[in-house]
Image (cartoon, rainbow over all chains, first blue to last red; front, side, top):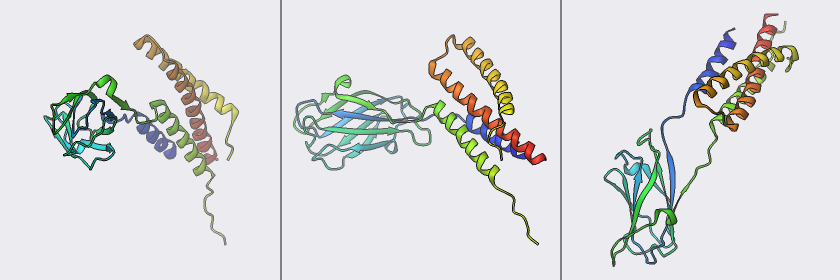
Length: 169
Length: 65
């Protein structure tokens, strides 16, 4: 009975333990402004004003651009500063916003954004046309449940097939 | 070790299926609908869970002998 109870407890814990409240989103932004840009400013929704630099990763840097200086202002605005006008028209950047230890919880969305230039005024991005949220492939909740059960079955069969060691005279 | 005991598996499948049906009925009562993915997920999980419980019972019976 001890084995039955232990396995049942493990199964229940694995099934009941819900996912932590956290989110990860990748935002793909294309420079459709027609000019070479030097900065990108993205206003992220779902941050609750708690976005910090550690939540931001630049996954894809525009071609011909050095690593940007990444800052967060106001707890919800990501600023990518390349210093010079290097983001060509049609160039793209992919920025990942991710919760760290559940903060901020999300879900994240792209509210608005602007391209900045060293030689002209800012141009707002068209969130509908210039951006896309790239989904990270994940296993669904049913998939996790089925995988847990399959793993438990495999473990049960493997442990049941073990024969107890016997001493030889 | 025998990996399948049909009679025992039928028993556990019956009990687990009843539990799943009750769960579906409660979910339908609360939500007013049942998604196709939930029905498929419940069916697969019910089969796997009943087989798992059948293995545990079979093991405990073997250990008792």
